[in-house]
Image (cartoon, rainbow, N blue to C red; front, side, top):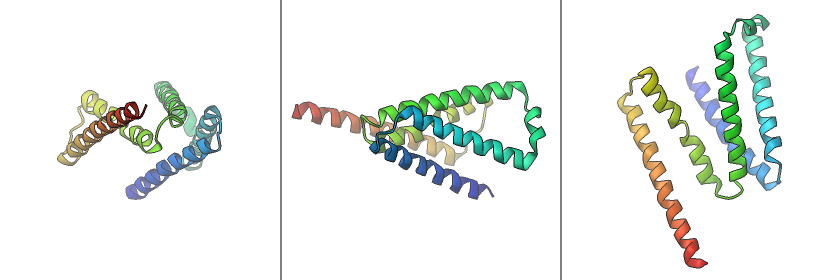
Length: 151
């Protein structure tokens, strides 16, 4: 079942990037895209939770969990909104890669705060993420130098 969730997550994340680019080409307002995205996600989450656990499950969620969920939701909303504004000024491939690499922050925090152990495979993945960031930085520097040369 875990692999199914992984496949669905990757497919959904990919669709999200494509839909952002389509919305950008159609010159949709980023605020509207953000509102639809989070309303749809919240509706699906509420429906699945209610279907699987029943309506009473909502009353059993501890208050700190609601606060954490709200804070994380606000951060995600701000990040997606900034992404949608920024995608108009750069390449989608670079922007989307940075969004994907942003998952390294909670991973590092999980290691530091919760003392999560890092297997060799995860360590290699974190190292490759760092290499990807360095390559992005190099690519961006070359792009800026080429622009200055043409100006």
